[in-house]
Length: 221
Image 1: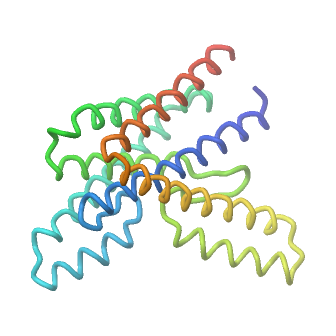
Image 2 (image 1 turned 30 degrees about the vertical axis):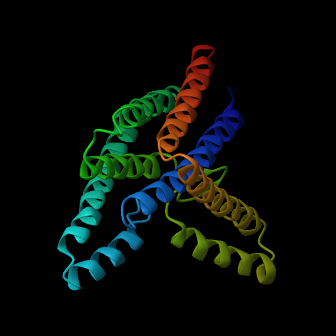
């Protein structure tokens, strides 16, 4: 696989994980009293409101997921730095970790304490957001849309008034990421309404298929 092939491959992984971040955010928001696994700005606002309103138990859940997210981001950065191998092989190892984690969560979701579930999903979110952050030549955030929205409009301005071709490409890439995240969140809400047990299993099946595909690709290199 050449350089362009690697870029396309990583971009696809970024889009898929963006969908999953929206998918899981909807799951935890509905099931765990407004808790987000990837949107930490929303978590901090909600946590502060609950904390200063005297709802200490409710505030604790946001603090737990924030801790998991921070740990996941730390682990993700460590893996990126230590696995100085081919991009595709590195992606295979990274995806394997995600698949195993989401599989354990899906399997034990009926027995796992809520605090451990949201901590683990927060860890997964921090990990994914650290690892998958490029869509073609554009740096994106696959779980936090605040910065993406700001950057989308910045690039739209440069496209319209400065005729900047790079900004034009970045604008469409960022817009794509935002729309995929919205679709993921909407899909998560719909699946949760139908059957709450299915959300984590669908996320696991998606990650397992991606990991299998990546492994096959890697073995052919």
